[in-house]
Length: 252
Image (cartoon, rainbow, N blue to C red; front, top):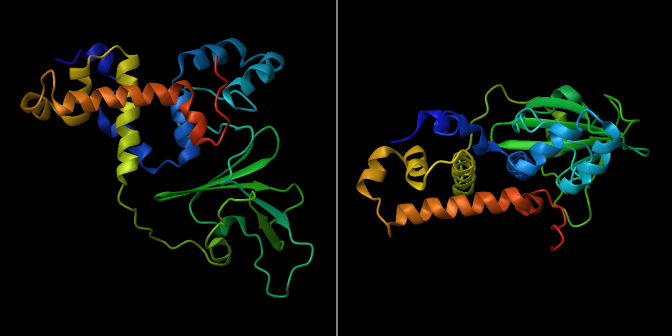
């Protein structure tokens, strides 16, 4: 039987549905913010900018971000930025039909923040997240050019997005198997951090009926839950750096 005292925050799968639409950077934050040592660093240093600036790079950040905020509200400033971030600059030699930068025509819910180094724009739409770094001299209505890191894929359809307003209704894509894996991994990780047993985790993730039908020492369901816990722990303890395109931690 699941203990309600340590299951309150991780047992309802509905609380994790937002994970299905997160990109790699947002997932990296979800794993990092669960790291016990990161949470301790936040409590110790976030009110002291001098020490925080020395601590944050240890985690691959320019600034410490509040681990109480999930990826829908947090804006971690990774160091360096992910290759998926598109840099926008004024076009100093625009053609006559140049597409102007139009902030309000970018599809999706927009968040504009300063990450400690530059102005960053994040645009969320169903099943999609786009991230931009805005040059200080870029203003609404200017002809613009975009740049991506060498080797990164160009932003497909970006000029079209700027030229036309977002449609009134946008259909959500079905969650991918990879997205479902991340949901289950984060839920299992939270359960493990809360001290839940493997059986309790299985009941929360896959239902009491599934556990009653297939739970024994060598069951596939038990092995699946164990793999989820190991995967979540590995991502929390440094694997998140791969999602954020950061160098791996040095070997101890």
